[in-house]
Length: 359
Image (tube, rainbow, N blue to C red; front, side, top):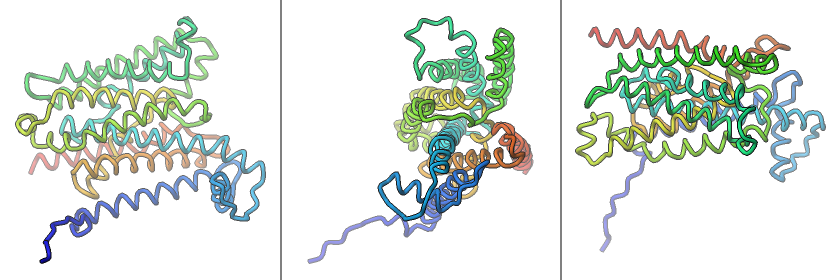
């Protein structure tokens, strides 16, 4: 006698199939963008040479000659930059998705709610004042942790201002974020005033946001912190779906809302603080990436979080590639490119929400 078994095939659901295809497409687009970023630059490297060099490091000989100059440029300069761009973009994308889920509003963004500004304060403070700190604090993790601590403080302040009894007022949240960003800008300005000429030159380019000068030794501590934040967000996907029902309903379904709230703030500050410490402020990625993937595949956070990570990584890698070739042989800061593209997107998003509210 045959026993019937109920097995669910996710590909039998058209929406699930669509989401799988979107994730696959984003992964392929990111891989192509990374190959292009490795090939294009002051020294153009044929893309087949890039593939051959990568394969050689994996023990596969494709019998394509790669010169020492090409190999050195690829692995010492371009790949660290590409890997950092993937990490930063993924962190900004998933952090933006988490904050939007927490506040149940697509306008929430690490920059708008003070995380980026607070993290910048911590990083600039370490650059300018860290020389006077005890010698044992001068480790690879020092500046990312300073940015993390300041990012937590700024975000907690914004949230405390916007919180009223059982709900978070979104208008107050955005206004509090603007106020905290203004305060952090003033603090950064004062710290810059205290800096030496050497520190000022470094801070000028750092504050505009960019991936230039990345090395393996610099990026691995930051990547560890960003990976820790991303892993934490992965455990909160179901909680974010429950929060979409409202905090009261989510609590009745067993979700520890306050724990999810606090953990989201800490993880966002950890990931964004680590990225800001090394790259400066790269704006609007955390706003745009989650919104774009929700338009493509719906609002389930089991899809939105990984898709936002891929979309964010793709946006930053492409923005960095554009920044390197737009005014070659000079180079634009990546933050300038993302802000130039992100500001019109934010205006469109505001107008779209106004149109929905008027219906």
